[in-house]
Image 1 (cartoon, helix red, strand yellow):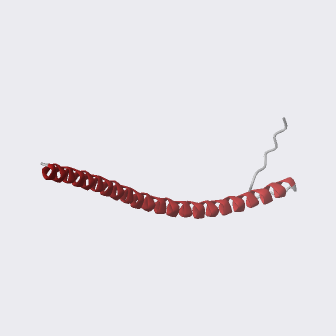
Image 2 (cartoon, rainbow, N blue to C red):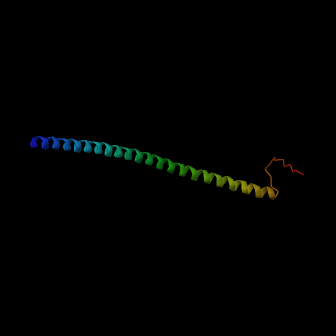
Image 3 (cartoon, rainbow, N blue to C red):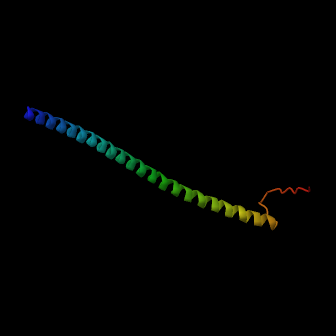
Length: 93
């Protein structure tokens, strides 16, 4: 009788351990899969950030260039210069 009880208990413990190992394996596999997908998403976001930074730098250079042109035009107008064939209207109010 004692041998039968020990065998049954041993089988139950082995089944519990097997289920635990299986559950842990599935859980770890899910974590690894999630980590891989998050790493891929991070790489995509970093590439997009780099592209956006490059575009931003190009746009800032363009804005600086346009601001410089506008500034030069403003100084020229204050000095009395006008474009050829341009009519200047002065508001008297």
